[in-house]
Length: 280
Image (cartoon, rainbow, N blue to C red; front, side):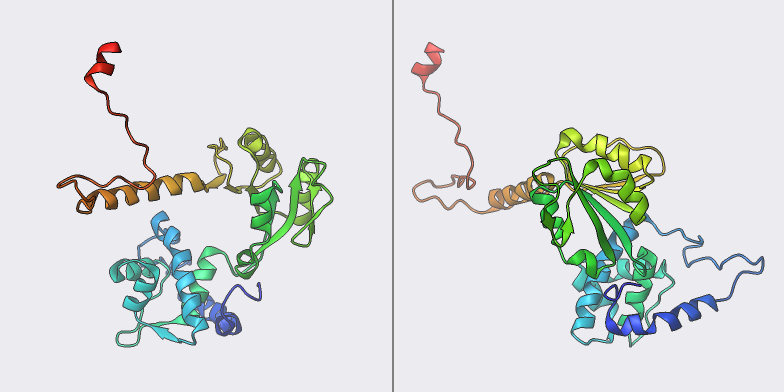
């Protein structure tokens, strides 16, 4: 278990938590008891997507020395409503105590265990450009149980250099690196033109979880999970909301009663006079 994968209190109690879980009653047929949603491991994808957000909020509470938290407080910290949070946590078999709330350390353990963060996950980063360097230097990976096992690149000017205490190796060594380090997750931080080829090699080497930063939709076989991170798309979504907020504001341009203020940075549309229209 990674030393920083949980808060200090939770990591100290993890062994006893595991024993407690092992002693949970089984169904009469000997199979594991179903979770509250009626399925052995049927956690909805939407719930899985919110679990890391809850975990981040729980880490913050633990760092502040808070031992118990009400569902309303945890929901506010995670940016969801309390009913949704309680339903999500019920899929983990966790129910708060009325008037007391949730035990923060134990909930950290439960969420971490569900996400698979009670063990280290070796990661390889392919692409040692600016983005790859930033990812390798990001301390949040190590503190959440992910170990950067290696960095690979095809540029001979970069191969052999040191980034985040890792010596960049040539991408030709990809298969050997995956096997030697038992890599579980591949991160693609290459240009779009080479991303699919890198993906194919990772999959062929046995990697079934890929985080893709390249501006390209990857084609993968059944059983391979790909998460795509596209910063330009996120910025465009933010631009949409910024534009909507700007359009909703009252006109504030002097001398233009009822007129609309121009959106900051917007391109102006040239006016067409009758003379220019006739020439056109």
